Image (cartoon, rainbow, N blue to C red; front, side, top):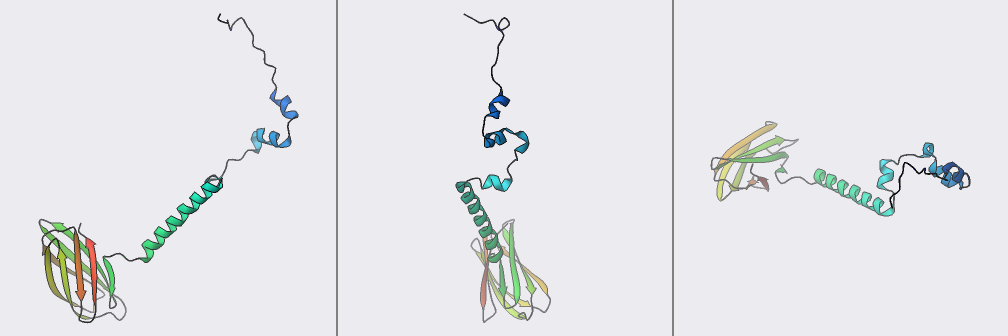
Length: 167
């Protein structure tokens, strides 16, 4: 038996206002639209203990990554007797082109250095002289292309090793 909705009239005996009159003050405040505030982003991220610990973990990991990136030098940069050295390399037509940039700091070493470089099975030894200029660039070519380029630099007293990925 189907009802005919047009013939029947629905009557509701429900009044929210009348029901809220007998409710407690806390329930009336919850139903008052003017008293509702949207939670803040921080309040949402720390709404309960598990979310707060998750948020704290993200903050600690982010801070650790930033501090590590700032404090730990990359393998393609090193300080050698008062000279800041930066290594870069790229492969082109079966050869690896290497550039060593020197930036002299206060009381930097001036004189001859021996450079041993290797990449993809190719190796070379070069002699360079660090001059009094604040910035110098030494370039050379290695036969063969490798993924990594390693350079050992020595002056007779000290030695350093630089390593970079060939582009």
